[in-house]
Image (tube, rainbow, N blue to C red; front, side, top):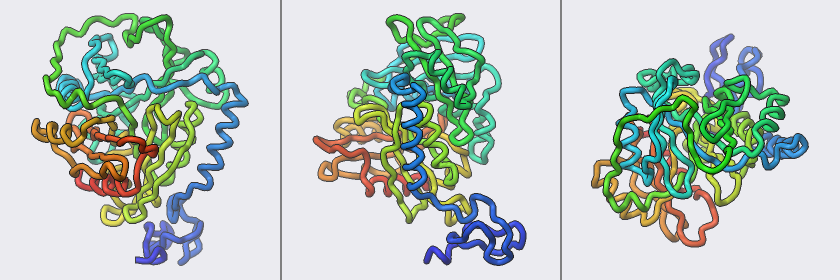
Amino acid sequence: MRDEDRTAGSCDSCGGPIPSTAGPTCPHCGAALDREIGFRNSDARLTNEAAHLIEERSRLGLDGLVGGLEYVVINVEANHHRAAVEELLARTGLTVDDAFADDVRATVVLRAAGSADVLVTARRGPSPFEPFTDRPKARALPRTRLETFGFRCVDLDAYERIQRSRGVRFMTAEPGEGRGFRLIQTEPSAFTGNSLGLIERIGAGRSYRTRDARDLVERFDKPERTYLDRIGRLDHAATRVRAAQRDDAILEFIGLTNYRFDFAIYVKSLNSITNAARLSADDFAMVFTSGIAPYVDETTSGPTERFIHDYGPRVHHLAWDTTRIDDTFAGLKRDGQEFLLDLVGSPAEGLKQTFSTPSRHTLLVNEYIHRFGDFDGFFTRSNVTLLTEATSRQ
């Protein structure tokens, strides 16, 4: 099918079909079209505005205030809390470092060497993230999502002052204090549904306990499976965002961190773009996946836009650096983990990857990724295509 033959919805005024190549007005009646009708992503605006944002960060004094990823917060329903922790212990290299509760939530801290921590929480009351879960396949678990990415901050007062001057809104009037840290958190993004936490450590240690935290009297056992030792750090996370908000989501993230826009891989046959923001080649990467064009219907929109239609904008998967990936994949399958596809890639191509089926406790997919030898890339186009296609089966 030619691009001019594809439709991108219908005109609200006359009901006529709108070709994907349409301009700002309806070709039938001349009425102004919705911003997303006929919209298609390109990298020109994104690349240009990202460069201006990086210049602005330097001018405002933000450079160097924010470091790498320190933690992520995955919130789940209270009756799924234990199962979510046990699942992550059985499917990753994470182990329990701490478990506590306060008047707001119960928290289990999971840790692996060289990795950002994973905080699995269960809120005791309503969640400010619930508006983002009001989608057909997410409503049954309204408080379940990866809520927050927490980054190290060396001067929280300066960061807060500068970001407020830029119009950034935070969830509290001032930073909160815990045992050995200060923390402030942005309001959930209108583009991603994610929040960013900025944490400044006071002294040594890496605690997340609030002032009123008390021990959570639960025991969690790590399964004794050799292959789990081969699953290492959190390599990247991928958030799915609507096509027309791709640029805004990435630019917002760049403005809040010291990350930069690195690359985009277009898979036109699946109406999907995989975009990466990087701090350095060795740090956790933030990936954003969107459609090239907006959602139209279940048949033609592709798996990325269908996911957003079904679940809303949210984190789709967490990717774990994995060695001896063939043996690890076999071990996970033997112990009951199901996958959306077999391993894709090869040593000759530089990497191998796969996606698990989504968790019924967290709604997240686990990606297992192994980069071989001196491979200096991040993804390959062929793997991205196969992985994107596989998500249509979830």
